[in-house]
Length: 80
Image 1 (cartoon, helix red, strand yellow):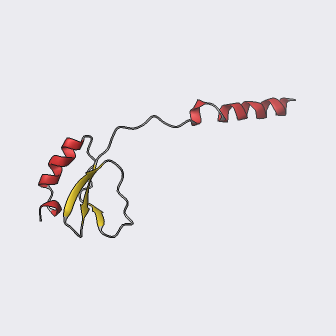
Image 2 (cartoon, helix red, strand yellow; image 1 turned 30 degrees about the vertical axis):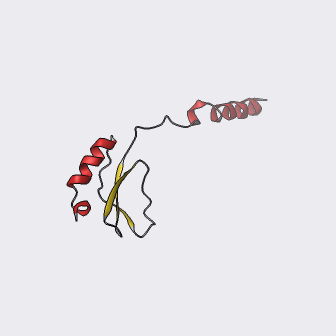
């Protein structure tokens, strides 16, 4: 009987809100360089690194799109 109650307690604990999805984090913007066209763009999703002609132009993560767009103007790879 004790074993059954203990198992039930653990099942209810695992099913509780402690394992629910976390709240959505703050938005993040990235500057991505297309090496074929030498064109930089601002994206709001994490860039994939397995694409051969798409690279991250800056290691910085920007909180707003406006910050990222002003960074595009100052980054060396984007101004070539």
